[in-house]
Every structure is written in C-alpha cells, then in structure tokens.
Image (cartoon, rainbow, N blue to C red; front, side, top):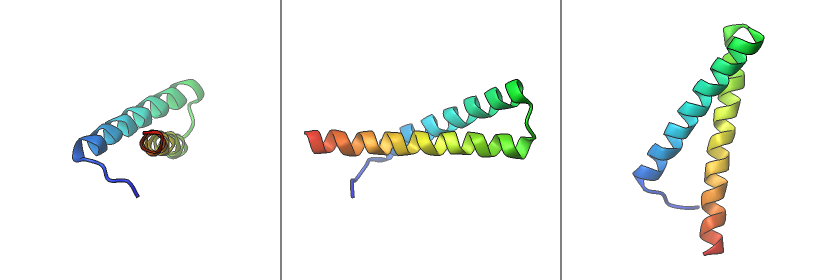
Length: 64
C-alpha cells in the first residue's frame, strides 16, 4: 500500500469533483436524462478518475 500526503488526496479530490461536474453537466445537457441517472454516470466518471490517479501514482513509484 502506498502512503500519500494530504496534498495528494486534496488534488485527487479536486480532480474527482471536477470530473463529476463535467460529466454531470455534459450528460444532462446533451441527453437530458433524469437527474438520478445523470448523477450515476457522473459518479462513475469521477470514480474512474480516482482509480486512474491512484494507478498512476503506484506505477510511478514502482518505476522509480
């Protein structure tokens, strides 16, 4: 398991919130799905952004 500083988690949280907002607004505006379905799509995108950030961090530490 990797250790991260609070700044790393703040960055990841900021990215997740930005991804959620962008996904929510784009799906809501383009396809006009119900709000609950749109929120679920956005939450999935935000989760994937967090997984990507974590995986990049782990792979960078292993390469070093």
